[in-house]
Length: 595
Image (cartoon, rainbow, N blue to C red; front, side, top):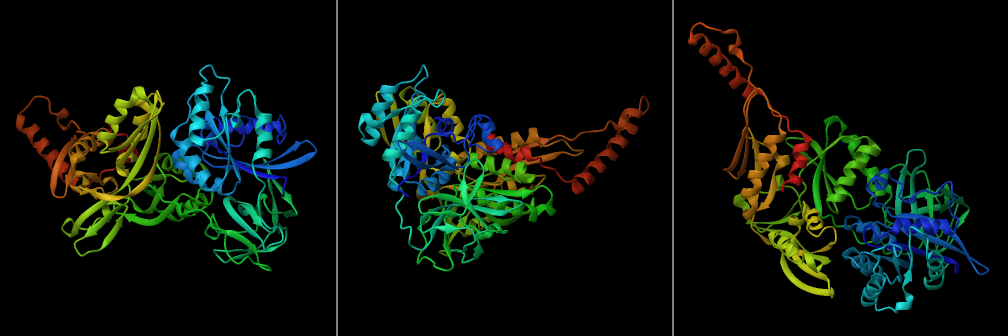
């Protein structure tokens, strides 16, 4: 056990975690030159295309230092704020962390938030400055920032380049010397923490775990502590690029178990595995329950695919524990699920994965956040969906979730960023200059304001330099109204939204204009209206496509033409009563891109 080292790599998005992980795998000869590719741990097509890590990936390496052979378990984690739950799980399975900072960008918001996660779990932090081979590298400036942040000695900071492989041997030595070996009692009853799981269509569910105490052997009868289910461990082993079966996984090591579990509901990330013969007395304190930030309905395009969608979501939830969903129904879209996500990027990734991995065509409704509604009877309701609001006469007041946003940027963009936050109803809490040209702003803002396009706007006004992180601080009173969209007088509940009264008129008008562009023309006029209660605040009309019925009347009396036009008018009126308006999926998504 003294030769095992478990560590993760944490950093802001795009600071070179996965590239550095590639170099570590090369240096320890874990992969042959033929198996090697860029960002080898990013196994999903989506990760390769977008150039981001979505899942944390575990892999085991062997490293020889002096006469000793060490086993290094590496977890490469995502950097985007929407996947911070993945990071928290990786951190709970490790004793040390490589904190990577880009030499050209310096410390950014997600670096700080991931660092606090690691410090709360008492991890040994090894600071590494990456990309030192770049022309724009500011090594000394970044060193000072790290010393300020960590309070460490300048000599403890390692310099490396993921592209050229410079500094990799020093990192491996530092991991062996500085990261503590796992502590645990090898003779105690088995306690293993499940930190991830995947679905395999041939072998059932494969759970990844870290053994905290005791050991697990092939053929053992094991029990999952929280669900109380018992299984036979058909196969246990360690995670290399492929699964490597072993006879026994000992204390401190990271491995996988295959026990023929078919149902996704039986495996919970954060559960404890123990043996039936000699069970442990209590479960390991797992991870805190995930709190979704953004809610959206996901509905199958074909209504009879409802059960397939449920099965797909359950399998996806195995691999992405931060996804939560409950069944719901909508007048316009039939039966579907109300899903909770950690952010808009997370929503986009889940929708894309449902399509690619499970071939599910889905419609996603307008995302919103959850509100607390206090009724005149003294009840408190959690409302995730505008259609779940009680009647206006029953509402006493509504509270919306607030966040504390932390933005770090170059001081040149100080003005535009403040204006953006004020437009989004933010209030400045504090500002503080980290260096002469880097400023940290803390704002209290409503979560609903940052859900749509805040991050994109922040990136564009700061030319990509600003970084953003947030956490929920609680609920506050809000003057909110329900904005409905009506098509030919029929309410489309999937397009309804809860919005601040001051923004409702603008938003309603823009929605109508956008829908006018997107809804295809029919044989009859379509009235698109935005309404607050019974009051219409905006209207656009999609004109009918008309057939020229008078084409055959050339010359002759005008009354002949008039008779034909009257006949057409009657037909149009009847058509409007029976005709229905098809709303394309692009219209639901267009709301997100309203500017």
